[in-house]
Each structure stands twice: as C-alpha cells, then as structure tokens.
Image 1: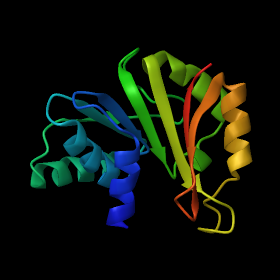
Image 2: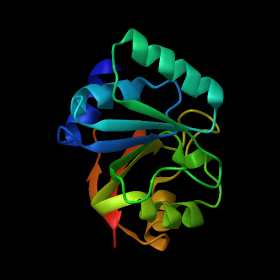
Image 3: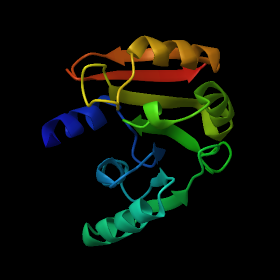
Image 4: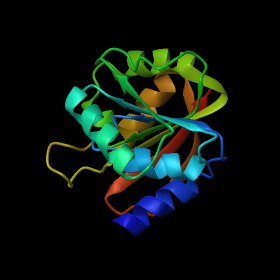
Length: 167
C-alpha cells in the first residue's frame, strides 16, 4: 500500500542529495518515491534488466515531473552501476530473482560509496507463490558476500526488511 511504501522510504532516513539505486526497479513506483525524497540535488538510478520497464519508468517520471532519475539497463551478471557512486542500493522483491547471488553481491561492493548500504526487502515464504525467499537465506548469503547486518525491521507482515553494510 501507499502508506507502507512511504513508511519504508521514511525508515531509510535518506539524506537529500543522496545517490540511490533502485535495483530491479520494475514499474518504477519506488524509483519515483525515492527521487522525490532525495530532491533534485540527488540522483536515483532505476536499474532493470527489462528495457520495457525502463521505457515505462521514463514516461512515468516525465508525467510526475521527476527529473532526477537515470535509467540503467542491467544484465543478470551486473548492475552496470558506476563505481563508488551509490549511497543506498534499494532492492525490493528482486533478490529472489537473482542468480549467483553471493558472486553478484560481492561485486556490488564496488559500486557503493564508503558507508554505503544495501536495503533488501523480499517476500517471506507462504506469500506470493514462487516469488519468495527465507530471510535466513538472505542473511546467510549476504554474510558470505562480505556484508554484515546493519538493521532489521519487522513492520512488514509479508516481507523481510534488512539493511546491510560492507563488513
């Protein structure tokens, strides 16, 4: 819901002027919300493997008069984000889609600024058939990829919500 989405973004305490990547941006709902939160002094990279999604976000942003979104066409192996450029990587309901996650997230460290964070929200098992993952798997894989848990939130009933920093 819209109120939950706002609560998620408020929980992140993102500073105006930050650079945020919405990895697996899909229809761009959170890209737009994040872009409005960080104001025009910041940048949101909307990252997706689907060119269709990126084209949709471009139109959606224009309609919303949001000008601080950059579109990035990713591959399944790489986010294609610029090196050492991102304050927060936001990943909602996309983690379970990624392959070779430990390798993928190990490489992702290169795009984070020092003190950068990775936010992972995903569906808990028993919800959204076939599109879910156990929270324990996320925690374990991120640890193996070289991160440590920074914060964990439990207000989303059907989703896990964890924030990681580089170990």
